[in-house]
Image (cartoon, rainbow, N blue to C red; front, side, top):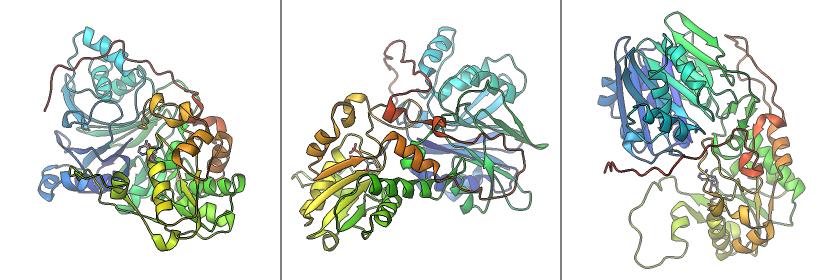
Length: 480
Ligand code: AMP
């Protein structure tokens, strides 16, 4: 759960990267950073918190140069602390490089152990640093060959942005777990790369195409070139990006996130109908699915819950117990919508079950006569090793409880999920025409089918094996 962004050859590289990261803020709110290059030197600024709080105009002005990469982080490997913030920037024997990574490596601990055994000293606990060390010891000459060499040794998920003093390199892992797409500033202008194309709109860049799984795009003063340094592997794009994670105004690998979510909602209404007066979303992620549900069920869509967008982290908890305090910080019911109504609440997923339980109780307390819960994905039973923050199996309520048991725990009148098959159908039927007819490069595309998605958090079918740490690492250097 991170976002990456980069731009090559623009006088306002740092400012545009700042805006790009702003549009990717939903992918990570713990830390952010920008690295720039002026052809000779790299400059870096990173901080904890939101993009808007980390960068001042003065700091952005100091990030000189025409090339920049940026990163927003949500920690899924390595703790939430400044030393794990990205981009990581290092100097090694052949120059300097900055790297930003979205995804999780599945063999990072094992590689780290062997790198440390031969003398590598790590500065962070992030899995991304493994790539930096592998690159530094590579016997290849050019930065792109060293990066390719390093990446052939790692497995798992990576959508990666690298910046050297005179090139920008974007790589998507051979299975294509996480999204990555290519854009261009108007009039054959600077090249732009981002986790999601919705970030292009803010800076007026034009979407060109998605970076293909297994593709490495190298951009330098000679222009753009594309190589495929990895052996072909079956495609395994994360379907949870469509269900929950990506922005609804993004189209990823030719599938509109918004239309996918609406289709999920439509299918929920068809497969799991219930007599109800009103359909309400758990905002914001449940909104498109609820639009689809209400339309297919022929019942009104209403906003029964209002979300505060300013929650952040609160340190003030009242001493006195306040009912629903945690969830009320984020969501508050509108009684006039709910009172005396049979309500269907639509959410994208149940993880631990704590949020849904509080929401059901809150909606009932606001006067609903019946509260039915519909989930626009299957029961989440397995943790993700490829970059989505899901807890251990023990914490995932569906790994040890049936749908009826969860329904009882959550206190809903009825509960239903989509099946894995239905989810695939709904997402695939949202294939969109490319936003742009422009084709700077041939698309090395393969058309997506059901077998091209990773659905491990629901099915337990892991496309890449996760290799657990050889031994539990005892951190002795406390950075406070
Ligand atoms: P829980 O209370 O643990 O069941 O959380 C369920 C809520 O978390 C749902 O409203 C989801 O939209 C949201 N959610 C699902 N997956 C994630 C995730 N990986 N990180 C943060 N929130 C999530």
